Length: 137
Image (tube, rainbow, N blue to C red):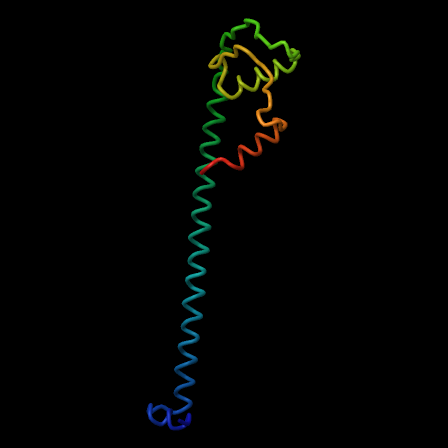
């Protein structure tokens, strides 16, 4: 089959076919770019809405903090037992401060602090990495 026979059978000249093809091509480009512009606008508006909502919540949190300082809760000052491994008082203070900041003032009670012994002969940080990377989903 020759191209001239195909064009003649369709009843359209070569100019008409190129005109239709060009119109279809330009329509496709216009539709694609209009949808892309619409997506950009929608995403930017959504981003502004989320940004303003986050700022409002931060402002409210700052207002709550600035309104009235809370009274310091009474803290149990009973001595913490440390094992015979010789943990210094500074380390005990750091651990107690970390627990206090995590659970809130007076919400947790530390009874003893002792060094953990490696189960598998690995250092503690190495074992923590293994446990973290092999934990099931």
